[in-house]
Length: 517
Ligand code: NAD
Image (tube, rainbow, N blue to C red; front, side, top):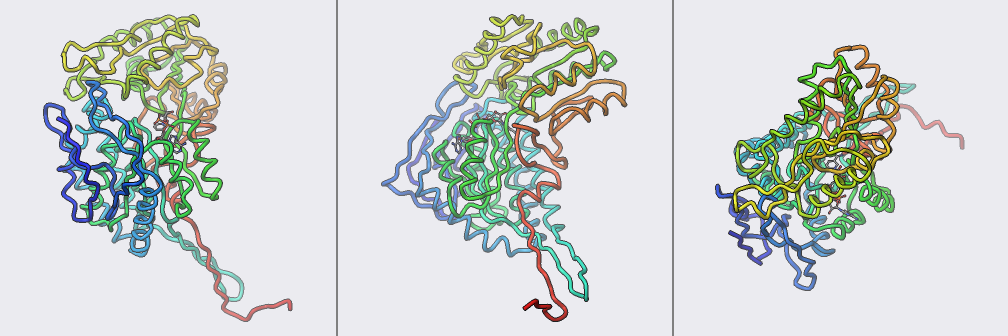
């Protein structure tokens, strides 16, 4: 069932968000209010933004229509965030932490509802969506823990004079998200921002606009001041208005490399710091002494999570020559066994890709790989589940490509779908060189039983996150981000505090001014 009300005003006393989006067990979403969220918002009739359909990837049906925010709405949201900042930034870390912990509790209570809505809007399996919600909650808990530890330094100077530093927030931060982890991205950006005393205006991808709005409601319900975390909807125009806004102090972006470059350019006009979490084409190195069972599991985790739509995926799988046949046989056997279908079912391991266009683009990469001489060892075809209600969904069989070489498009470009390219190598030196032969550097993995080789190889890999004997784990306590064109800055871990705060140095003179004049 789809319902949409045109009433746009949701003041502070708005109904709980469960009344706005309600997921029901049949997998339908009932949308009864607009999807923007900020304090005392008003909708201008003169500035009706463009509208676009939001789809359910599992079935292909239209969930709702999204109306983009224009300059008027962006201004309102930034103004709301600005006044929330005045209040929030003056609170102590302990006070901010209390509200953030409360938000984490609410997320825990609403875990199933949030995960279901994510599945309906994104197409990933419910099992994965629950883990995304958990990661969002853990991230908020983690930064709540850090909020009260933010401190400066005291530096003794000659004559009893001294200086101290204060770690201060930046102001209104903008978050712009991709469609592959909608709720998690909103939390990974807002948690460190809020812990440091900033406020945020977040723009989700127009493809997956729903769950960021739930996060806004969660923070509000937890006691956050009105306007602390705001959601504006829209695509590149709305995003660009946010980046150019004079009252925005920082932009944190997750998305593709081409958009990342534009964001950096726009932010540079206002000399605003950016965090860029961009694409990848990461290598996974499997040496002949690897534990084969774990290497196969690792390769599947590196390629098929979220229908392969993961930035850190290890899609260039380099396998040492002697174990290649055994590895390929096992990987193909398990890929064939992956259950594809209704993402809301517990047994499903692979749901639908995010859109028809994107699925078709991924399939065209498979065709191109064939034309360039790769062999399809399994999959790479459109898939139609037997359930009639899923007939219009955007499914495909996960694909394993063999006989790949470094010059093929499937090995060079980010496909962002369930396509694993398998390559063969002979020596450690050779594979390290080939692994680094890319402009991207988000992640890399090494499977080997030789602990010295593992560290030696990792030292040479030019990637922000390196995994030894595992892949695609992202505990919120450790930094995540890219080398080279995969990004700037980090998310998660203690270091992210530095990306959402600035140091003020205060000099204190205890003697007389030693003037030269
Ligand atoms: P995208 O770059 O097309 O869009 C990302 C966001 O930017 C969307 O919200 C979009 O509306 C907005 N946007 C687009 N043009 C803009 C402009 N000119 N100004 C301001 N905002 C603009 O990316 P996508 O297709 O949503 O996501 C897929 C990409 O994201 C992949 O390349 C993937 O690797 C990357 N990604 C990276 C990470 C990471 O942490 N490194 C995580 C997830 C996804």
